[in-house]
Length: 217
Ligand SMILES: *Cc1c(COP(=O)(O)O)cnc(C)c1O
Image (tube, rainbow, N blue to C red; front, side, top):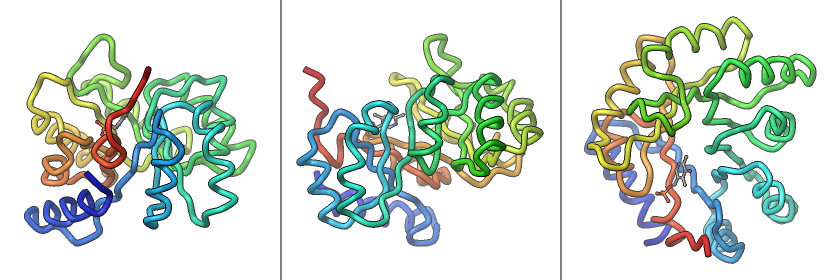
């Protein structure tokens, strides 16, 4: 598939859901992809990218940022507290705020530096033991805790279980966001971004459908 095809599908999904055109941001998840594929997408004019590792992003992006204006980077993968400072310098948004210790570290750094990326609280909607994120029952409390620390919580993020209908998870995430007065919804990947848009996604994180399969070899 290609970037323009994904953009068309997003536009159609927005129209079908009765949503404003352009109300869904496309975060092109470039993790593990060869530089040439990422460059091709930059050449097509796209500027919003997602990475899941701080180190990988730090290696990949500085040369592109010298050559292309207006690049915006979002961290979509887990963040260790010892990488928080570097992540805050590099990313415009962090989609993986998932625990009190990280919240306290980000708050301290935000005070020190006077700025903070937009934050999404990751919710483990499927309550999977191996997955990051706060449990749905703990989400309201954690959002309140983050707000008490003056963190700019913009929305919620989820990664539904692979073997379940994602719509239930998207609906749950939207409900938790609404009752907390949060407008951002980071949900939907290559296989389900249209359904996520139907449930109000403001940020879809699409990797392989844009760049091709990832080769971890
Ligand atoms: C890799 C990744 C994506 C993109 O996945 P695709 O299925 O390739 O679209 C989205 N979100 C997160 C958190 C990821 O790690």
